Length: 70
Image (cartoon, rainbow, N blue to C red; front, top):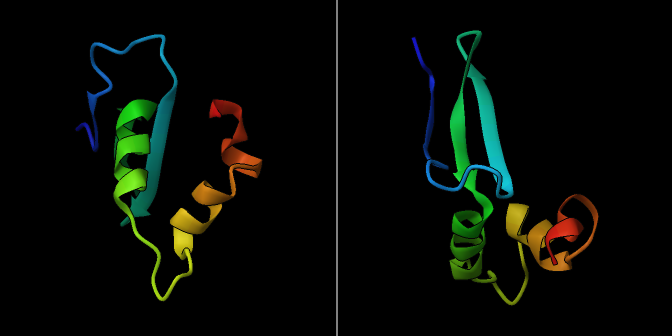
């Protein structure tokens, strides 16, 4: 049984990819997507009380885990 979605990467094979997974009841579930979709989603996230929070905080630092794309 396939427990992840990869249709957000179809047609973008060979391009940068973002994979997000979690384990639910000891089974891996998640999504694989072209990083362009991820960038668009992250650009829509707005600061809360003028501060970035959670994943948006790290994304907007433009360093560390995601610096390779900029």
